[in-house]
Length: 106
Ligand code: FES
Image (spheres, rainbow, N blue to C red):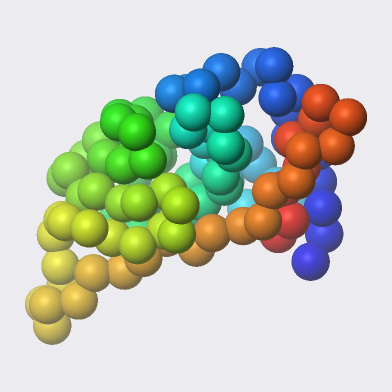
Protein backbone atom coordinates (compact mmCIF):
# COMPACT_ATOMS: atom_id res chain seq x y z
CA UNK A 1 0.00 0.00 0.00
CA UNK A 2 1.13 3.54 -0.72
CA UNK A 3 0.29 6.58 1.39
CA UNK A 4 -0.65 9.61 -0.65
CA UNK A 5 -1.42 13.11 0.58
CA UNK A 6 -4.79 14.19 -0.81
CA UNK A 7 -5.65 17.50 0.88
CA UNK A 8 -5.24 19.64 3.95
CA UNK A 9 -7.61 18.69 6.73
CA UNK A 10 -8.65 22.35 6.89
CA UNK A 11 -9.99 22.01 3.33
CA UNK A 12 -12.40 19.24 4.30
CA UNK A 13 -14.82 20.62 6.86
CA UNK A 14 -17.06 18.40 9.01
CA UNK A 15 -19.99 17.15 6.95
CA UNK A 16 -18.16 17.53 3.65
CA UNK A 17 -16.56 15.16 1.18
CA UNK A 18 -14.27 15.39 -1.80
CA UNK A 19 -13.46 13.10 -4.70
CA UNK A 20 -9.73 12.61 -5.34
CA UNK A 21 -7.59 10.49 -7.62
CA UNK A 22 -5.02 8.34 -5.86
CA UNK A 23 -2.70 6.33 -8.05
CA UNK A 24 -5.33 6.22 -10.78
CA UNK A 25 -8.07 5.16 -8.40
CA UNK A 26 -11.12 7.27 -7.62
CA UNK A 27 -11.40 7.79 -3.87
CA UNK A 28 -13.88 9.75 -1.81
CA UNK A 29 -12.58 11.36 1.38
CA UNK A 30 -15.14 12.31 3.98
CA UNK A 31 -15.17 14.26 7.23
CA UNK A 32 -17.81 13.12 9.70
CA UNK A 33 -17.71 15.29 12.80
CA UNK A 34 -13.93 15.59 12.65
CA UNK A 35 -13.20 11.96 11.83
CA UNK A 36 -11.91 11.25 8.35
CA UNK A 37 -12.78 8.27 6.17
CA UNK A 38 -11.92 7.17 2.65
CA UNK A 39 -14.00 4.90 0.44
CA UNK A 40 -14.28 4.13 -3.27
CA UNK A 41 -15.27 7.22 -5.22
CA UNK A 42 -17.35 5.26 -7.73
CA UNK A 43 -20.56 3.54 -6.71
CA UNK A 44 -20.36 -0.25 -6.48
CA UNK A 45 -23.68 -0.55 -8.35
CA UNK A 46 -22.85 1.56 -11.39
CA UNK A 47 -20.46 4.21 -12.49
CA UNK A 48 -21.89 7.09 -10.49
CA UNK A 49 -19.49 9.62 -9.01
CA UNK A 50 -20.19 9.42 -5.28
CA UNK A 51 -18.74 12.90 -4.72
CA UNK A 52 -22.01 14.11 -6.29
CA UNK A 53 -24.01 12.18 -3.72
CA UNK A 54 -25.43 13.27 -0.41
CA UNK A 55 -23.80 12.86 2.99
CA UNK A 56 -25.90 12.71 6.14
CA UNK A 57 -23.83 11.85 9.20
CA UNK A 58 -21.91 8.74 8.23
CA UNK A 59 -24.43 7.74 5.55
CA UNK A 60 -23.52 8.39 1.92
CA UNK A 61 -26.26 8.25 -0.71
CA UNK A 62 -25.46 7.59 -4.36
CA UNK A 63 -26.74 10.31 -6.69
CA UNK A 64 -27.88 7.88 -9.39
CA UNK A 65 -30.12 5.19 -7.88
CA UNK A 66 -29.96 6.08 -4.22
CA UNK A 67 -27.89 3.25 -2.75
CA UNK A 68 -26.83 4.12 0.78
CA UNK A 69 -23.47 3.25 2.28
CA UNK A 70 -21.88 3.59 5.69
CA UNK A 71 -18.61 5.48 5.13
CA UNK A 72 -17.16 4.04 8.35
CA UNK A 73 -16.93 0.55 6.90
CA UNK A 74 -18.12 0.80 3.28
CA UNK A 75 -21.14 -1.45 3.92
CA UNK A 76 -24.07 -1.05 1.60
CA UNK A 77 -27.18 -0.41 3.69
CA UNK A 78 -29.90 -0.12 1.06
CA UNK A 79 -30.05 0.10 -2.69
CA UNK A 80 -30.31 -1.76 -5.94
CA UNK A 81 -29.14 -5.36 -6.19
CA UNK A 82 -27.93 -7.41 -9.14
CA UNK A 83 -30.00 -10.19 -10.72
CA UNK A 84 -28.82 -12.56 -8.03
CA UNK A 85 -29.93 -10.25 -5.25
CA UNK A 86 -26.44 -9.10 -4.30
CA UNK A 87 -25.31 -5.60 -3.43
CA UNK A 88 -21.67 -4.67 -3.15
CA UNK A 89 -19.89 -2.81 -0.40
CA UNK A 90 -17.48 0.02 -1.09
CA UNK A 91 -13.79 -0.57 -0.51
CA UNK A 92 -12.40 1.45 2.37
CA UNK A 93 -8.90 2.88 2.72
CA UNK A 94 -6.87 3.78 5.80
CA UNK A 95 -6.53 7.51 6.40
CA UNK A 96 -3.90 9.26 8.48
CA UNK A 97 -3.60 12.89 9.47
CA UNK A 98 0.00 14.10 9.48
CA UNK A 99 0.86 17.72 10.15
CA UNK A 100 -2.55 18.91 9.01
CA UNK A 101 -2.45 16.88 5.85
CA UNK A 102 -4.83 14.00 5.08
CA UNK A 103 -3.17 10.96 3.58
CA UNK A 104 -4.88 7.92 2.11
CA UNK A 105 -3.32 4.49 1.90
CA UNK A 106 -4.29 2.65 -1.30
S1 FES B 1 -25.06 3.75 -9.55
FE1 FES B 1 -25.15 4.02 -7.39
S2 FES B 1 -26.99 3.05 -6.81
FE2 FES B 1 -26.86 2.71 -8.95
